[in-house]
Length: 290
Ligand SMILES: [Zn+2]
Picture 1 (cartoon, rainbow, N blue to C red):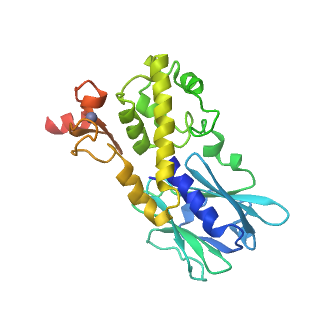
Picture 2: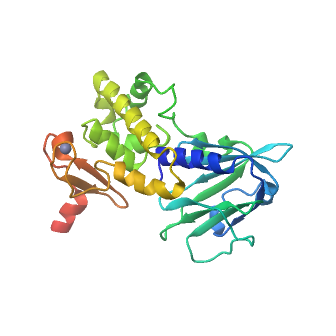
C-alpha cells in the first residue's frame, strides 16, 4: 500500500511529467471507484493540470477549468497504483474484470491509469471543489513532515490514549500518512514494542519517537525522489528493515524478524530490539497450534 513517501513521490513524478497538460477525458472503468457526482467527471474535459500535491495518503490533482479550480483526488488503498503511460488509447476505458479502475488522458495522448489488484475494491476517486469536501481529508491529523509537527504536538496526540502505539501511528485521524509498513519501521527504529500503550511514553521517549518518525519518512521520501511510479514499489520494499520481512534477519542485531497476525493484516518486529527479547503473543498462531 502506498504511504506518505510513495504518494509524495507520485505527486512529484506527475508534476514533473504533466504540469500544464490539458485533459482530454477522464473515465471510470469500475463503477464503485467514483465517490462524488457533482461536479461530473466531464467537467475535467479541457481543464489544465495546475498542480499535484498530497494530503496524508491522498493524491490531489489541482486542475484549472479557466473560471475555477477543481481537485481530482484519489486514495489508492491497499492494492491500488498509478501507472503513467506515454500513450493512452483514445477510446474510453471499458468496465471489465481487469485491474483498471480509472483512466485519464491528456490531449497529447499521454495519461495515466489507476489500477487495483485483488478482489477487495477500495480505491477511491473524488472530484471536488475543495479537498476538505473529501471526508477522509477533512478528518486527517497533522502531517508528520510539516514544520508544525513538533515533539510537543506528538506528545499532545499521545497523551491519555490508552491504546497500542502501533494502532495510534496508523490512525489517519491522529497522524496523516503513516500506514502498516512505516509504523513497523518507525517502531523498530525507535526500539519500541508495537503493543506499548501510547499514554505510557515519557517525554524522552516521545522526543525520540518524534525524531524517528520524521527521519524515517524523510529518508524514504529522499530515496524515492526522482523515481518513476513504476520504480517506487521496488524501492519501498528494499528500504524496509522489518516490515514484510518475517523470518529474515534483523539488520541491527541479527535476531529473526517475527510477526503478529491479525484478521486482515500483520505486523513485523524484532524481539531483541523492541520487546526485551520476549516474543509478542500471536493470537492467531496460538489458535492454530491448539
Ligand atoms: Zn533487532
